[in-house]
Amino acid sequence: MEKHYDYIITGGGLAGISLVHFLQQSSLQDKRVLIIDKSKKSENDRTWCFWERERSPFEFLVYHRWQHLDFHTPSFSQTLNIEPYTYKMIRGIDFYQYGEEMLISHVNVDKSVENVHEIVNTDSGVLVTTERNSYTASFCFNSIRFEKINKKENHYLDQHFKGWTIRTKKPYFSPDKATLMDFRVPHQGETRFVYVLPTSENEALIEATLFSPDLLQSEEYDRIITDYIKEYLPEIGEYEVTHEEFGVIPMTDFKFSAGENNIVNIGTAGGNTKASSGYTFCYLQKHLQKMVAQLEKTGNPHVKKSIRQRRSAWLDRIFLNVLQNHRVPPPKVFGTLFENNKPSQVLKFMSEETSFPEELRIMSTMQIVPFFRAMLSTMLPI
Ligand SMILES: Cc1cc2nc3c(=O)[nH]c(=O)nc-3n(C[C@H](O)[C@H](O)[C@H](O)COP(=O)(O)OP(=O)(O)OC[C@H]3O[C@@H](n4cnc5c(N)ncnc54)[C@H](O)[C@@H]3O)c2cc1C
Image (cartoon, rainbow, N blue to C red; front, side, top):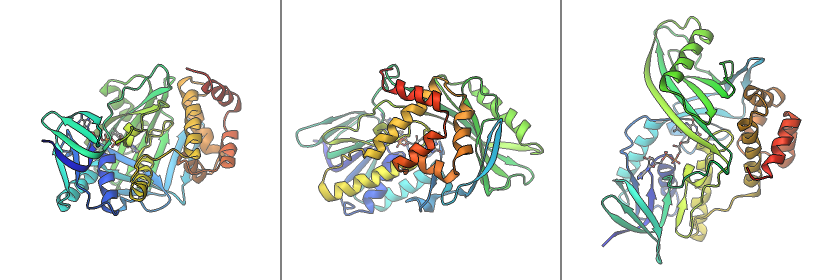
């Protein structure tokens, strides 16, 4: 006989742990919950950066914050004051440890380290089958990407990156200022830039990031980082690489299924990754908060997309079309955005918080002809 829960959460990464957190803060806190992940989540496998105006639901986990961000293209350099926003960093390991503590302190939440094979709707709820067990529940919140992205019929770019955390011998960085995007690296016809995220005078995460269809060999990312350090961080002196991170984020207008009946897809699997930037953290938190509030009120966790979200999805599609078809050189796309608009307005736009007139104003500052062509082609099948 299968063990029964109120909710099963498949995938205990960012979305899974966030959902447990929001459930615990709601009137649904006594529900019997099972969270299943194939990994123990004991590795520091990613670093989340994001910007916010208000306090994060995970403010207590923020490792570092910046109010000033450098931005560079070959023809434009500026230090952006992003007030009222703050750029924040949360380390994966701190987030996962918080998840573990939460599970230990709540007796109604179980965790199982298993590989999930299948999730199906049944007459009375859902059946989740793993390598060893079967479980039933009223709802399954799934963040495992079972769905294959149809790359041919959608815009698609991989955002792929390798980051080094480095520790310098002498104090070198200003921890109150980060480099958001530095496009001065050779871009080889694709979007390539470097982040520099100092967390102390001696420590920074330096990340080589590309938006392109093909991944590089590991040494090629290393070369971008070493060349960057040589050219743009002179006099850094001796340093050691204390940690490496690698990641791939899909940038696509493919419509991830939101799930149906008693299965609800969340996180990247549920379409919470912003197609034009790969940022996920804040969109996912906002979505889950809305979902839990609706579940509390109506018993239905399926949240409909707002008109603004649908408008943003269309704008993302235009940006992806411009990038994928090289309609404008990549540094110019982002350079134009920051050169012609207030930084806080660009971040508001990228956070999907702008009104329609504000979006029109921002779009009018972009390269009109290529963006208009991209807009027309988003109306046709790919
Ligand atoms: C290295 C990296 C850095 C990133 N940095 C940022 C950033 O700075 N800012 C930002 O906004 N976004 C960032 N992202 C994008 C996004 O925020 C993350 O991918 C985020 O973790 C997505 O959350 P999720 O819950 O959807 O997926 P995940 O956190 O990946 O969780 C999915 C979970 O499912 C588990 N799983 C998979 N298959 C199975 C299976 N068959 N059975 C059981 N468990 C399974 C995995 O072990 C994993 O724990 C980054 C992504 C990566 C990869």
